[in-house]
Length: 387
Image (cartoon, rainbow, N blue to C red; front, side, top):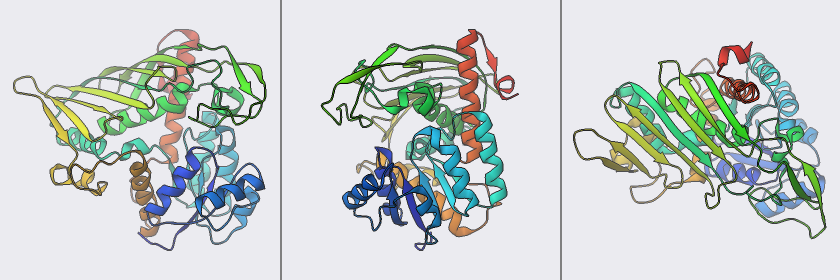
């Protein structure tokens, strides 16, 4: 990968600094960062040791040294910022979800195609080595035909009505929250691993706290603590705290996803179990260096992540020997290596080895089908939601 490529990060909250660290570890120069105000930009630049805190997003676009822009802002900004970056000739890597609705995401796919630039969505969980390993084994036929899929993505950081973040507001994050914010990670991952598309959904969602207390000083994602000792104000909430989504896949397999941001003690736990005609696979993001392999007629196995034991694809996103654990920050490094390696290679007709805007658009179409299913209490075909 070329070390001459330069990125700028937009957003100074929880995930922006994660991108900065991942970019540096991937060998990409970071020119600077921009937040919601010049003061926040400068403070973040100083804290992260970056050369520049941009005064505005327009200043990022005007910087001719910046090849790619990373968008880690609230969802409502994604469409406008991604469009502007592409139209000024920047490559774009955007946090999920790609946009607020499928109209916006479809337009972003079109703009990206016209731009001739690389575009990606930060579905980083694909880049745990054992997720690649599971995908490779399915492609090789060791699992057999996929029969059914179960799993969950659960957290606890919004358990109480005093827990607040911009993500709970429909105007900032979209009408779906738990499903769109974390459930889409699971949905993207399962389709990547199985190689199968979800074709229909049936959802039952719930807003546990229809009113939340917003600290007047704001609160950072996952911090659990207000940024101010000021009083709170009551805010009506319509987005989902938790819910269940039944699934149908294009090969006839079925499945079920449980999503929650109100499960005490689960800090950031994505789990799946894939059942096939020959074997079963199970994986948990809180123990990401272990893949359980189930058998009918012989003892089950536990594969510990070790590059000497992995497939070629999984080995390429593994940097440390067996027993030296790799985790969440490493997934961003590996995603960024694939993204910038693709840019450096210069062949944009080749299949991108990372999630693209087209993938991000499909996830939003899925979300809209989930929301329609929940509201109408029925199965919804994905083609119906996309029409």
